[in-house]
Image (spheres, rainbow, N blue to C red):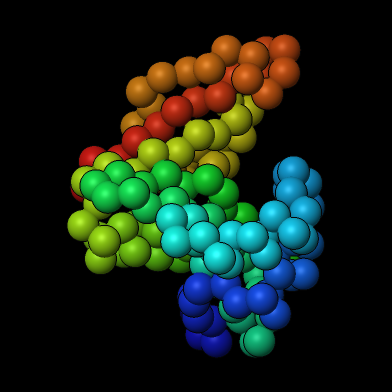
Length: 145
């Protein structure tokens, strides 16, 4: 794939990140994302293609651990391998920070995401019953580096 790059989010990216976030989850607002820019522990990284943000991830690094809070690709670009590119970046970012373990949480009905995480070596270690509502459990996963 050509014409893409991954970089730290800048203030000019916030509207595009918020648009992607709202396509999937809709749990945040512009100010919350802006506040992340000033946070030393929590960072957004964007996947840019042809000068447009088409995906992102939100990662917290508190050495020797990291937590992936969010990862998303614009619906117009799904199924084209961009989720894998983002996951590779997550892992590379964690390697550069000498992280031992990456944690994440995923809705039990999100089979595509679970499959992606498993492809990258994440394994379930716990479950939060009814976390997202009745019969919607959260699966906690981790990857040992």
